[in-house]
Image 1 (cartoon, rainbow, N blue to C red):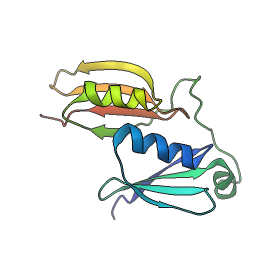
Image 2: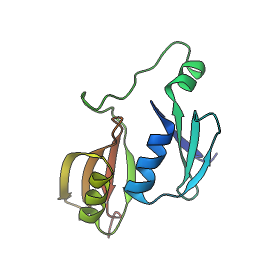
Image 3: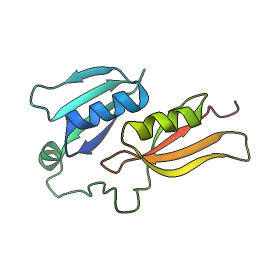
Image 4: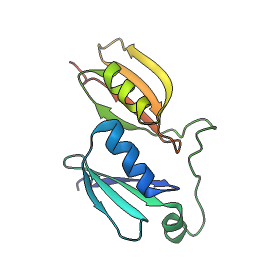
Length: 130
């Protein structure tokens, strides 16, 4: 078994792709012509986005949409960088919402939290043990 991808359901796939590309420098792998699905190249695992319309088709019993005005879900996307403050500044310039300033954890890792414009929680951190 291999972890293949994470899909974030968003109101606008193109806007999400644009945000993550600007905020984290991730190259676009694929965007479907319908605008309902897109992927970014993050290495071995894919970060994908799907529209709420597609989510409704996939999940006929419903689901909870992220809401930037409500507390975040108990899951986060993690981006690793050697310079957390610079990465946070870049994410904020791209439209992220600051949730927690960079902080050094007891094990030495620097961690900060932002939220994407649609409400997804994002951790920006140094490598563990760095």
